[in-house]
Image 1: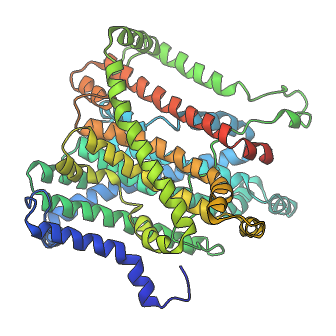
Image 2: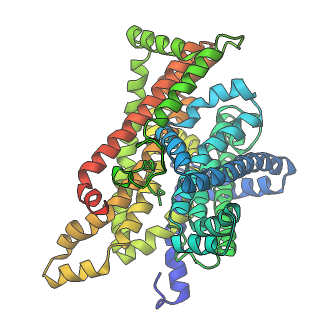
Image 3: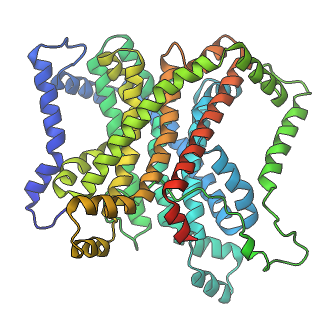
Length: 261
Length: 274
């Protein structure tokens, strides 16, 4: 964004499209052209959102979704970073795993969900493992690229000063690959949210995805949209958290824009 | 975005001389194939022991696959899935690439669109399926719209950064040589954005399949996602595996097709980067 503009005008421009959208929605809802079931007004959605935010039951549903999503994501982060670094530093690992990952990357893992249900039960485990599998790919690929791109001079000087292999990995390779790793994590986090919601919509009796389908089935569209807003906010907040974490850990390289390259 | 390419890191022939003594010349080239074959063989062997009904051996799956192709149980569903995913992918990625390129070069459009796009990017788009279903019905249109929406984002973001990353020097040079704005756009901005655009297309393609199967699993009367879900609930595991294999093959084939197109379009880039 330009620095020459007054702050207020730029803030207004940034949110203009969103504000216009909300306004048009409210006008359409109030005009009586459509039934309130099809287009519930913004005020009703807001009221339902308020109910959602203060009721402990609905907060429990949200916590189910978040804990599933985050545990799958965390598992994928640990395994993915380890595999990526390994592939970046060992030609043998890169030859075996690189082909494996690039060959299976375009296969939608969600198709295996029924098998996962049979293998790991219909509870949280099958969902967490599916999230793990979907998140693994972007993390491995970016970590691999990052740890291959480490400046050789840094590796040589570390080796020259007598650092062991493990120490070089931990103190040189991982920090040097950190910007890449965070780019991968930032791609993987929305995927984790997508898979949580999808699996909860397909087969679950709790979580926000289930709440969406349940509200739809009981024709409470205002409530459904309130849940949709909550999921959207959750996605934005989690993304913001990971950007904060990134700025704290990778302090030497700032993101110049909201979106990481 | 889109991550760097997933090119396998196979050693180049020209690097071969610098190798340890006794090591074979092309040590890792066939390794993945062996890995795959050994996995299949172990799976086949393991299936001779006691195992639950829902696990089939590779040979069984292959024979069921051929059988399903012959009996016509599979192909209508493949067709139904493609009718949904292709229009969704084409519409979403086309709109995404065009708007992304425009936002990358025009400040007014950038300020209007980018904040909203980047704000809504981490939102899982599948949550809009119920409301879109309410508006346009439960049929194919709602699925196409959701797939298009999901495909829009990676394409927009990559095209946006691609267009913004155009080297300023090239724009100046072409201005200096008297190029018009439209010429600069077509001959400078678009080519320099193309590598990132293709990275975005590849992410969108994978996303379109994820969205396709999840929308079909949630509600559909045809398509591969429906087939997987239906055969699962009617305990026809043979058909379930056949559908899953078809999904995998479809995803793989479309990805290869996209890579082929990219190799063709970006021949100049491959040549210079080598």
